[in-house]
Image (cartoon, rainbow over all chains, first blue to last red; front, top):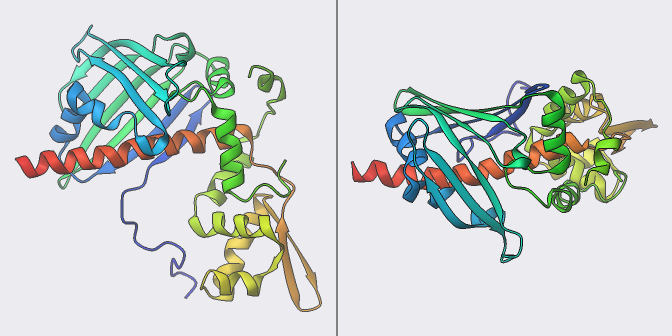
Length: 176
Length: 119
């Protein structure tokens, strides 16, 4: 009876995983309930991209979103935390590979991006799509610095947020 | 924020794996939260989370191995408290990063659903 997964009821949604795969790599995965061409479309049409890239539930709002999704084309996303327009965050770079419905590769050229290259693959199976997002940093130091400064993913205020997380985990006692 | 760099400890992979494994489960995160408020026996925790003693013992065992919880047996009661290991900055950062993408993907789910309907 121990084999029953008592603590893990069937999830209502698909699970997102994130892992530091090596000294230089971060990997995020998620499965979507739709074919790869649809998920790919949502990543490559700016009018769709802007609908999900800055989730309100995370306290982000998008100021502008440009994406010219073709090899050599550039993107530029600007967003802010809450209503604080005084500290907008900019993310920009270039697409270096665009393979419809299966693969997107782009550079992260803003200073805080640490020169990482992001590869997203879309793998369809039985009408669902497994998405794998892979950030490859030029060196261990670059990824360590990105983590330390909290810049990757647009988290300029990471430490306040880390504190929140620790509190969420009930860490106020015992975990300084 | 750079000062954090100097404070960054080299975490062995095994330690990180154990912490992530331990934190990947909602019940175990709940147990940590609970123990953050007060120490509790395995029986208390089993009741609170509506599971068998055996099931709860397993969860506590995983948390204990990760160093997140310690237990002490007094008489017939095993009491659990938060362990000495704090969540590393790196682990916390990656969890926050995961949450960011999770929020994005929840929104993306809606877009995908809508595009499916249109087809």
